[in-house]
Every structure is written in C-alpha cells, then in structure tokens.
Amino acid sequence: MVKHRLSPFLVFILFFALSGLAEGSQVSLSIRYHDMRIFYIDSNPIWVQITLTNNGPNPYRFRLADERAFSLDFDVRTTTNRPVEAADILVRRRTTSQQVFFRDILIEAGESFSFMENLRDYALLDSSGAFVVQARIYPELFRPELPVSAGNFTSDVLESNRLSLNVRPPHLIGPDGVPLALDVETNAVLVRERLPPDDVISYTLSARQRGQWERFFLYLDLESMLARDPYRRRQWLAESEEGRQRMVDRYRMELQDATIDADIATIPANFTIERTVYGPEEGTVTVMQFFRVGNFTERKRYTYYLRRRDNIWTIVDYSVVNMGTE
Image (cartoon, rainbow, N blue to C red):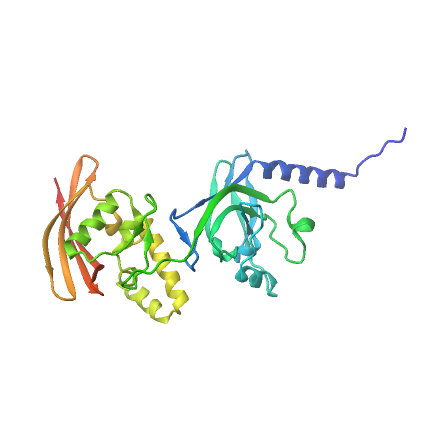
C-alpha cells in the first residue's frame, strides 16, 4: 500500500483554511431597519443597519472597503423569489475602473461591529410590492471580474437574516400640495390640518409622548430646522435638489436618534402651554415641559417658533431655558 504524505507547507495551508472556516462560522451577520417606517417609491433612503458579531473565542478580521459596494451586497427578491435588479449606482460603482481602498477590521471575541447603508444604493426599488431582503458580506472584498459562483460566493461569505420589505406607491399629494403621510400604527393617511399654533404644539408633543414618529414629524418644517445651524445652511445652499433631500432625510434620522437637536426629541412626562402669540404669518408658543430624571422632575421652558404657509402652521425653530428641578 502506497502512503502519501503532505508537505509541511500544504499542512500549514490546510490548517489555515480550516481554522478560517471555523472562525468565520462563529461570526454572525444580522440586519435591521434603522428607521422603521412606511417606505414609498421615491428617493428617500431605506437605511439598514448591518452588524457583525464575533461569537467565537478568537479575533475575527475582515476587509471593509471605503466604497462599501466592494464589501457588501443585498439580495432583494419578490415574494415569488424573483430577484430585483441592481441599482444603477451599484452597477456604476462596480464597473468603473478604480483602485479599491479598504481597511482591516478586527472584531474581538464577544464584540460587534456595525455600520449603515442605504438599500436603494444596491437594489432598484422602482415598483411597489412585498420583498425579502438579505445581506452578504465579502470578507476578502467583492471582485467584479469574477461571477458570484466562481469567486465571490465562497464559503467565507457571510449571509444575514432576512427582512420583509413593503414598498408602497408614491406619496399622495393633499389639496394644499403637502405630501400625505401614513400612520405606521393605524395605516391611516396623516394630513396636515389647519390647526392654530397651540394645537400644533400639543399634537406634536403628544405624538412624541406616544412614540408616534410619523405624527411627531408631521408639523416639523425640517428644511427650516436644519438651516438653523450656519454650517448646515451653507451646505444646504450649495447642494443640488437631490443632495438637499438627502440632508433632510439624514437630519430626520439624527433627530430620531437624538444625536442632534436632542432637546426637541426628548420625551416630556408632561407639558403645559403657557402663552400663544401669532399674527398672519408668524407665531410663538411658550410651553413648560417636565422631564423625569431619576427621583427629580426637571423643568424647561420651550419657545416654539411657527410659520404659516398655505394656511398650515409648521414649527421652524425653538429655544429652551432650563428652569431647575423639583
């Protein structure tokens, strides 16, 4: 009987490959929607949070490209298992001759690494319907010159859980030219009504108390709110229409995460409207808001500035004065 022996070099390569597979199998990839709301056929981003978690005992390394299209992919399919076409921007990014820059990411045992991507940068969601979304991570980068089956979809590729996605037809436009939003909880159409300024504030604060984000944002003029900051205002003026829409979407997301202008997004335990003053086009509403902080109640006096356009009052600015605790 002939015995075959592996060279030390081949033994090393085999051990390295098997250890890599074992390591990779203990790394999980999960996705979730960053902002769970109703999605429409429009240009608004669908932000997905991608999280890699190292459940194994050893550190896990992978390459993350600066242009995420070379590290990440989304498999989006209809309920009949028909794949959705790739977005035009994804095709351009992967077919343009360029040098791919990346950094090595190390995830220690028991730790996670997360980042966010806009699903619309990967899938052409130009029709309404129900879809299933799954993400893939390519630890050694996606190589456009190779088909998925040949070199990109190998055993070290990580696959995520699946998310359901419902895309609705475009926004309906109300009689005043204001886009109609849908309430996430009731699926009813939300329409800006011709409320007086104090009722607008009561509606907005009550929505925040109940965690109803679509209602909370209904009377906020986000364009005016983000332009309060001089730097953002200069950036706004320099942007194209598409760039401005991205700024508004990003500002909305940051408000919801309380990473910017946190005072207006903080949930009040109670509030009392103290004074309302308004003229034909501008108004102010002063509100005493109460916040529970441990065993104390913090009091803050808010002044909301509103502007009327097409007979609809919206919030364009605010200021806060701390009034101490009780």
